[in-house]
Image (cartoon, rainbow, N blue to C red):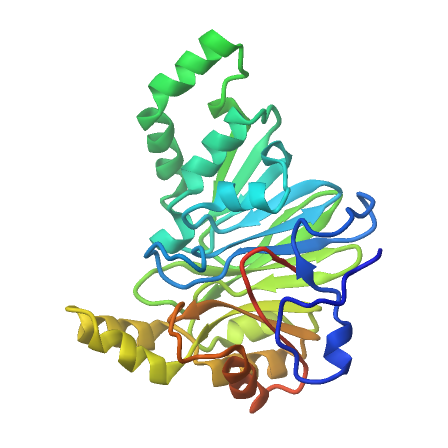
Length: 314
């Protein structure tokens, strides 16, 4: 596949400049079975709407089927901007029940269906995922019934099959991929999961939100790509200083996120080939440059580092 050399990331040496990374939707499409594609849809930490980044979400594409991990605000719009057809949705995985990861879970299902989805979708995540799904369909019952009657659409609810996860292990397996999960540490939200996708050509791990986690290290052993949340501790102080609930928020953030230095330690211990930084905490501090993220991770990790951006394909 022909890939542009104009990278959308900061790399630390000449070897990294050869990475197969590009903004989604800007280069020729590959054949359906040629490559497992990872697109970062949203890379900002926290639910607050921002100009420069969407909340957490990513999609893995295999044989033109979409496996979405987390559904922050705007996930359907970001899929459209990445040129991923919404009817290609097959599986949705929620790492934990925080609004920057689940706010548009129901909307993704509804909008994919409104866009032509007629095939089964399986959703996976911690409780109360089944209740959330049922209540969302109840809330939108009028619109759904109207479109079925007026537009001849296939009923939506029978297409969606919800699976609640409570422990580590194999999540699902199909002709494209095997998915495993591990419990990670994100108090007070429990359970919280990381997911590993083993496809025919590469392995991808999504950390979800967590502090330093031995379980994540075990899950990510030898993976090709680890997408890990990242916290820049000095900037948390600046964030707290400008908010009325700053002290409580600072205590919360520091208790359940991973410092950028510890992110590097996780990646090094797991022996992953590429570390992708995402879910930035804080997400929009103008004093933090991409190089600062890289330099801090480089103190503890020797491998390839990518600073994630919305709509970046890796």
